[in-house]
Length: 328
Image (cartoon, rainbow, N blue to C red; front, side, top):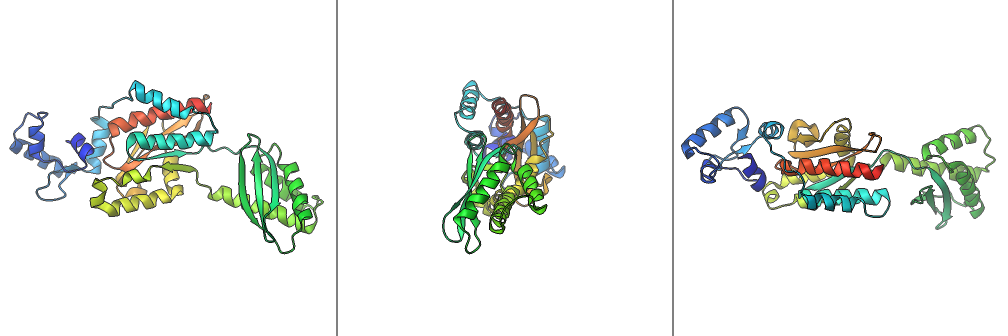
């Protein structure tokens, strides 16, 4: 019955169970069993004559003790490894993983970015207009990121150049946090040899990057549109709540973060997690590790509670292990 519900998303009736050949009982006997399971809180009847569907407790019982997992096929494993190992920076691979999880599960795929700060090589402040400059940060790995910096009135090109040289000299080989601490200590102690305009530019540049680091999403989510399937149209408020959850990436990241210490794939069903009490959503999540066994991130799938757990759980687990080999 649970498998029928997970496939269709619709309540299942006694006639359907007796007619599929899997239960050697009459419809009356099946109705009696279903009624007992409903009294135990494992099934619920959304309408008087619409059949029954598993509750969150019923799904949990099924997932923990009755589910027969379907391991990814050889073709699926090859496709997963091929997508993950495609050339490009690690961030591109993580986006590929998130999209791939969405494609394979029919839900939304998520990958938590590894908690690591790159070593930096250079920061340049390039004037754009009289009141704005572009802060260009270059990492030792060649990655480039840009941010806008507001300029004080009358800021000269000379001040921008002096601030850029100062930032680059002290950023090289350090993380942004390490460099910022060292520069602020030096500036506070009056040892920076910067004029007032250049000193203000350095502070503005550091403030922009520090604020960005605090707000930067640590989560890549792909495939939200897959949540709007045919069954979702009858429960649009639940779907809207789920999409709101996904917009709040920090809260979702906190849920995934709780799976970091798990030895195996974790499953969060509906209101077992306070965040999903309204949306009735489920997450299947697994940590991924480097070759030394250290957890560097978490990946998973989020969707309605009627996820195909038997297929999604081993797929998420295999993807986590494959990504770990790439992280090294």
